[in-house]
Length: 145
Image (cartoon, one colour):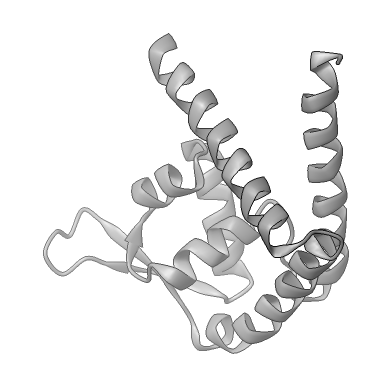
């Protein structure tokens, strides 16, 4: 088997997923670049931008741009941390919370499309393999530092 086939197949699947998300979330002003930040804030209200950057596994610039976009679209706001004035927490606004159920519906529909032809056992194995791939690459990236 050509080893590049695995990487190519993963990248191709990711691109189709990106196109689906961008198309279906366009009306909300969300897309593949901002969605991970939106979802992370929704599940971790008050998260600092540094923590957000680490959870999404990206850099400061992309995190700042994404949070600025969420603030501009009125889905999130920055608030000063009461314990440490130097830190801003990111919170969803009422509008950000209001769209959450619809965003989840769209993502659940995508998950059903992705897993429709897999048995429950195959899906569990596939997710386990993807997690293993991520873990292996991550641990090798840490070793390179």
